[in-house]
Image 1 (tube, rainbow, N blue to C red):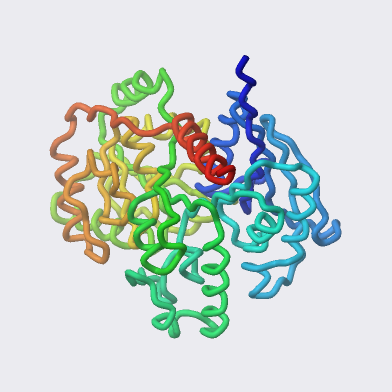
Image 2: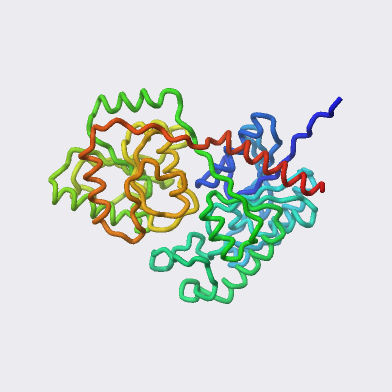
Length: 416
């Protein structure tokens, strides 16, 4: 009789994890872990951070959600520059957790503030490790390749010698980069959410040849989404634009504002609605932002949880994605495309891979409102055109199954 296949025990690390969740990488880490556990495909233990003044530094508190134990390391305030990327105290906690939990594989996502000694802990224990890169933290001290003047860096590849005017201490930034790249060379596999992210990172010296593309999944629409969308359109036939980026230059808000101002001045149109999402934790992003001089009806809506996603997307017809930097992945774009929402977007790196199916002409980064305004007008002129067909987009379940295959591949290579 063939013995049953042992389900692997994965030690997952991410700066945030339920019950303290924030950011797209956290969503990916949580959803993949939950799917693996729900299908009994793996056991998952998580490690994340917290900061509680009443607890001693580097003590650990355990919580559990959806079958995943989360070991939260209490981080002290006032940590220095180096401790945010290489912290031996955190590494010591990982040493202890690895010894106690005896996992089969470590999987790290965003480790800013956790630091690379977590990966050294895996090496010390001869534990295979997969690193998932979600942003440019590994090649850019500023994490998103956005310069001090809030303009996209545009280096390709990134050369630390060109970063002297952008970092507070160039020697420290260079030491940080060398440390990160040295540790990354020992990782068994590095995953990237797009071809763009992998090519730029490896060209910039991050463990060339170790990377694979592991695209992020999204929450797919529920069975009632199309009916809810149709009912909203029947109640109010006006075209609804949606914007989830926040009122910052790097997300393209000044261009969006100017384009709508020009739309009103040149066409007199005001037969539309714009919903802007306040993605802040405290509702502060759009507080004090005057929208009264813009044509149409403007609505500020609160940030939504994953379970409320269908409700938001059923309320819009066109997603505006005007990012002014090249991102590693376009989560919101894929959420929209999966639901038959049109997209107007910039040519922003990984966001365009499988993300332009409903888009008009991609808008170059740095281009002004002269390209966006005609696209707004064209969308209004075409309304009420039938909604586009949804695009086949990977869900979190499929992403988790792809990760199972990657884990099996790494474990097989370790066994030789």
